[in-house]
Length: 106
Length: 122
Image (cartoon, rainbow over all chains, first blue to last red; front, side, top):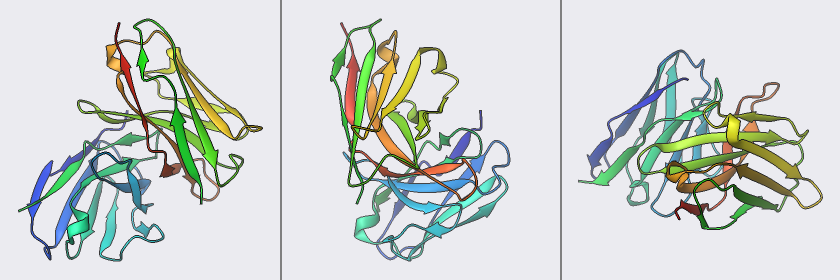
């Protein structure tokens, strides 16, 4: 199994802050990585696929980068609607998710 | 736009078979992968498996011995059957469309259904 480890588990930030979330894979996943946002009581929503491709309709303040085993989700200027939990997903071998990063209001 | 709706019993007894259906509207189930994913507070998001429009399947090895996924193109539905359930199968179950990267079977999930909560208890 490919294990996905996100850090931090919880992040406290203010509106306007630049936020980064890291996802590390237990082995190389060659860029087969997606990011999702989940709000309480809702299903996850795709933000980014294949490392850095922004899903249609997703604000440009979201961006993704990385390679090999380390990947980063960046929110350039945190907005009130962005307080949520974020998950990475590898789809190199089967599919596994990170444990999530909760972004909360500071 | 494509919408997915999961349905099934909210309560299943231990040792019985869990059966769920995902009804797809706004688009055909042909040409895509259709996955089931479950979520618990303890284990987070866990991919269960997928069925491809050709009927081929791929299962999470940890569930493979108990799992059957299928599709009914005439009804635009995807189905899950998980046998011999235990309390560990209590979760929110989602279906999701798998969007594949050109020329490969690798895929991410978009969109997701709203999910259906399943509790395993006597």
